[in-house]
Length: 409
Ligand SMILES: Nc1nc2c(c(=O)[nH]1)N[C@H]1C(S)=C(S)[C@@H](COP(=O)(O)O)O[C@H]1N2
Ligand SMILES: [Mo]
Image (cartoon, rainbow, N blue to C red; front, side, top):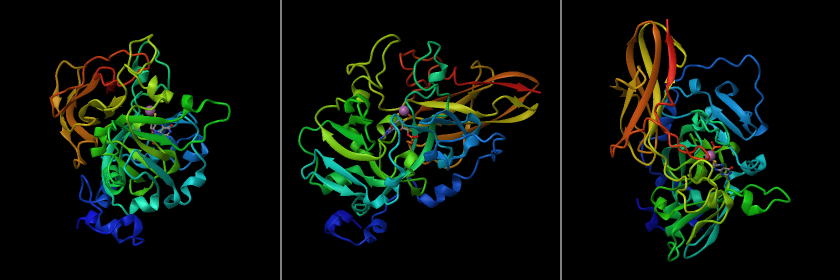
C-alpha cells in the first residue's frame, strides 16, 4: 500500500498507518535482528570494583566500557564480541556538551522538530513523524576519532582505541518522506543541517559550542529521523527522543536530540562544522577548505583473541565495515601482514551500512603472533597498511596499528 496516496497522515489521528507503511529497508524483521544480536557474545564478568558511570548512562554495562570522562566512554575491545548488532548497554557514548535533562525522554512523542528549507516549513512532533511511516536500517555508528590513540603525535581529543564504534539498528521515518509531505525541498538547497537540542551553557557563544552539522543533500536518499535504537525508544545517552541518522557517515553527523532540521544553501557556520572535524596535516588549524568528516572509510579489527590463546585451533574473531559501501572480503594475517587468509563472515548481512562480524580458524603453535585484519569494500578499496597522520587523529583505518599481539602457550 502506498501511504502517500492516502490523506495526509499529519491530519489523520489514526495510528494504523505506522504498521501499514512499516517497511524494513534492509532486513525482514527488526525482531529477528534483536534475536541475532544476542549471539556471539561471551558473558562479561561483573567488574570486581564498581565502575561509576554518569547518571544518564547508569543503565549501561560498566564492565564493557572504558570511561574516559562523564561524556566519553568506549566499548572494551573484548566486549565488542562477534554479534551483528551492538547491544545498547555496550554502545559507546560521546557528548560534546552535557546531555539535556532526562525529562525530554519521558514523553518522546511530544518532542518537536522544526523542519526548514522545504516548501511548507513547519514544526512536527515525534507522534506526527511516526504517522508518516517507518523504516529500519542497521548502521555503524563510529566517532571520527576512533583509533586516535594510535597516532604517535599525540592528537588532542579523547584517546579512543577501537571501541568508539558499534553497529546499531535504527527505526524512524525516512527524511525524504517528511520532505515530500512538506511539499518538497526549497530550491537550491545543497546541505542537510541538523541542530542538537542541548542547552548552551551560560556565557558561551552558541556557535562556538553548539552541535550543528551539515552533510551533502545527497544523504537525503538514506537519512532517517529515528526514534528507536535496537527496538527500544532511543535512550537519552544516544539522542532520544529523536535523532538524525545518516547511514555510513561518521558519528558527529548523526545529531542527537534533534530540534531543527534545515535544508540549506551552505554549510552551517557553527565551529563544529567550520573548523572542527576537518582533516589537515599535523600542526595546521581547521578550516572549511579541508575535507569534512562525512562518509566513513573501510575498516576492521580483531576482537578475539586479544592477549593469550592456547596452542592448537584458535578462532580469530573481528568486525568489519565498508562505511557507505558494502564489503567484499576480510583477510586475516597471524604474522603481522606477510601472509593473509580470507576470513568467513558470521551471521546475517544487515545491509551495506552494517558491520560484518568475521571469523578465521587458525592452527597456532606456541609463540608470539601479531594478528591483523584487512577489509576490502565492493569497489576494491582496501584498508591501507599505515595511517594518514593528521592533526586531530581522524579517520584512522590503517590495518597495522589495529592489530593485536597474542601469546600462544
Ligand atoms: N546533539 C548532539 N549530537 C551528537 C553529539 C553531541 O554531542 N550532541 N556528538 C556527536 C558525536 S561526535 C558522536 S561520535 C556521536 C556519538 O553518538 P553516541 O553517543 O550515541 O554513541 O554523536 C554525535 N551527535
Ligand atoms: Mo565523534
